[in-house]
Length: 487
Image 1: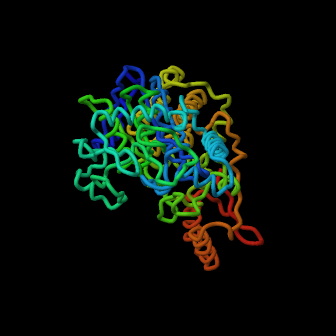
Image 2 (image 1 turned 180 degrees about the vertical axis):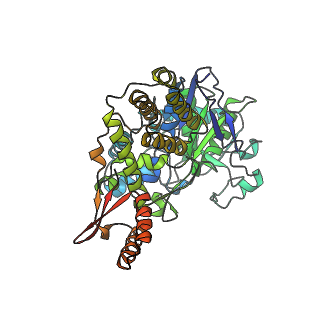
Image 3 (image 1 turned 90 degrees about the vertical axis):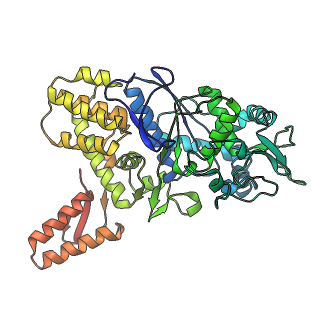
């Protein structure tokens, strides 16, 4: 059993919050859908990994042993996520005039570098899809032998009519999924929802990546990869599968169908499915398909620390859409700087990797109560906004002795991953020229300046407060107002 408050998580499979009940007492297996390494991961791509890292941190802090697998997709994922067409990595290799190995190696390194800058712990396992093709071929052969598949010109397809619970995760009927508008039409498919478990080469086609199979040379289907790697590394059944909400309707539905067909057991393959929502840019999903999606390096180039983005992500629950704005990330940076500054005065922070260790370090009832509130927040479906709000309230007050405050900051750092024990507050400094900030902030400044000209000091002070709420201090200079990030 986990220590402290009971852990409840929102299960996409049932659409309700459920208590975590590890299949093996004291241990949790987690599979997270990883990146397709054909380009740089944008800021929206980073949310699933900060989310799953926070999940892992909370589980380990509660005293559970966690094995987390994050796959690297370097083969099988087609442009447009269809069953036909070119692999994304092959298209990237052609575009960049490089070999597939060079492309996947470069973007894998970039992904690992970015998650390290976000203080995402290295997963227990980082399997590459290309290393598992023989096992995928065996998996497909087993499905074929059991009558779950059929062959057409473009490959070996899973017959969704053989899967009675197909579509349960997406909460759609079989008929609705078969007629779903998002699904492509492939000549010879029996049902529109049927999907490829092995994609064969078309006549006259020769893929860069190809393997022999009983159905002809080709590559495994994208959905097949996660089933094979997760079962191999975590066992026939494991506790939690995570990923972006965009995977909930098709990719994860297909994973479940083929995995349960392969296992042939009268039980769910994975009991808990957790999905994070999108990060939005100007009310659009931040995604490569939208074009112009910003990268983590773009924030760094703009003077922001990568951990300011992690803090920004934690200000919303993982199941909430989050609007990405410059003002919001800078406000997160300002708040993180204040926390880091308070922590700096108390360093070295104690090493408190578990709730039990943190509880033992507390010396007062107020400290124990603050720790209990942190535990309750993160145990309730990873409610990081509540945890951060309470932490900031405690830090601004004077209710805790330094020893207990240091212990609370160390405990919060263990579950939130903000590097409060090492982060230099000076790294989060920033000053902005008024002309460089967003339109909303400039409008506030203009209204404040108008109030000052009219000598309406109460209105001027009120607007100054709004600007402060956005994370900025107004400094009036002979050349005009200048914004400084709050400390």
